[in-house]
Length: 174
Image 1 (cartoon, rainbow, N blue to C red):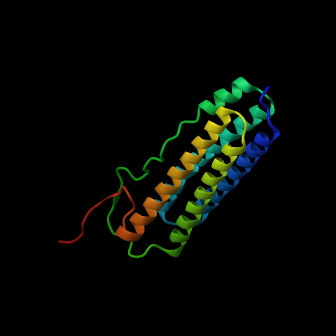
Image 2: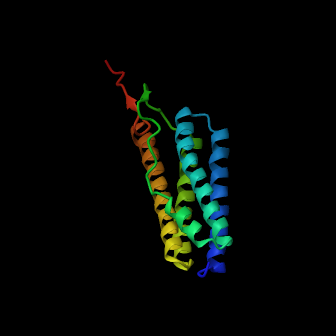
Image 3: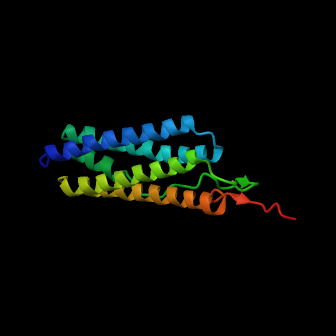
């Protein structure tokens, strides 16, 4: 690879660590949380983060091996998309009277992680060499923004409306 840059490799190594830590956070939260709707939401985000980890690990490994064409191909596979709603078609009968502190803390911590990941990828894109690597890192940053926005929307719905965003609900009033 003619454009191999040790600093770019350093950022790719850090990106792998970031995604490993984020995946660990979500998996630990899944094991501890009891709310089934929060579990469904966390499963959706965990799938995205696992995809990031697989992708960035592959890009990093290929970059370290100086396989330009394969790095470009692997980086090009990343498609930016917003998380899908895991609640489509579900029905919530009653409002959550008060979301538990564990749910609120989890939302806040998850949003903070997604924000930090976004900032890291934007910084990495500034320092990395190679247009395709910069583009790849910016795509990851955009996905992290979408994750944070999605988490914030879920938190707002639960805290303000008492219903998980996207779940059909019925009014129990006569």
